Image 1 (cartoon, one colour):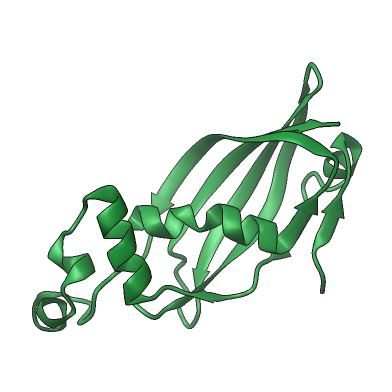
Image 2 (image 1 turned 90 degrees about the vertical axis):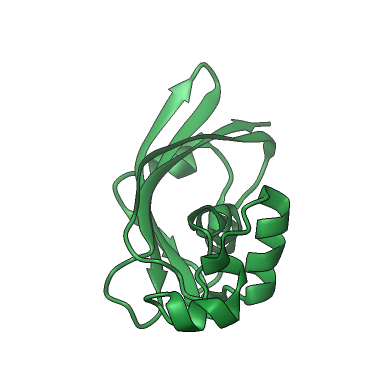
Length: 154
């Protein structure tokens, strides 16, 4: 299935309470983890030292930073939808975030997203998405949350 096209506030409203889609899987690599560690100054060994993690970690490998797995959310959202006729988009909030399962290096993850609510804030569309980050082969998701975006359509 191709991307869902959204052109205006009414298109979002029509999806309220429904699953919008599921993204393609992406692989979380050690290179991504290391680059994220550099960007965030978080070099904890469980993320960046594969040799030590293989011996000392309960996961027997490095794991992605929780915030790295959260950071791919926008990419995965854009894998599901194409929002057109937009002047401005803002990440507004992340609510009820729960990290449930670590993402072990080289795991494949994908997002399952449903639209909780849409609100018109004087011409700004506020979208609340329920998100589950699934890990291929695991029953337990990496995390669940509600992400809030603001859209200003042309």
